[in-house]
Length: 128
Image 1 (spheres, rainbow, N blue to C red):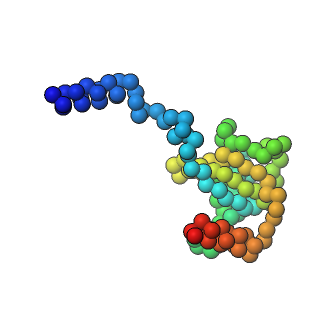
Image 2: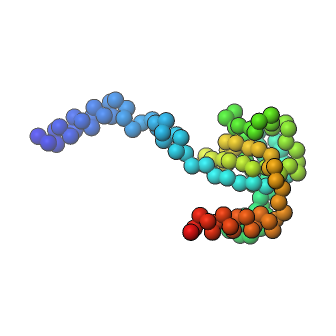
Image 3: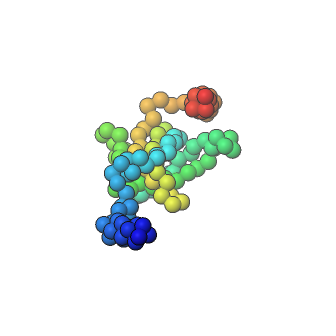
């Protein structure tokens, strides 16, 4: 008897589409990553920056895709960015691609040593 009731409830839930689409709360809970660096290449739908890889302690070039959903800081668009600009990027992983959610020119430019110190302080705060 209990098995029949459970089966009916499960069938009704599947028919109603429960669990098939993410809720607004789930979409809002999407975790975004953050990075910063100097632009080395700009394409029609991609920005490549030189950023510091803290795991390997080396500078690396990393490409980020620009989509129709990418938001730019106030008054900016992709055409306002130049090679050499320091930028801050919030992005999401989409498979093996990094898609820019928000990008802005960095208002403060730090040298590599200063950035390493800032990131180490931030990491210490997160881990404590």
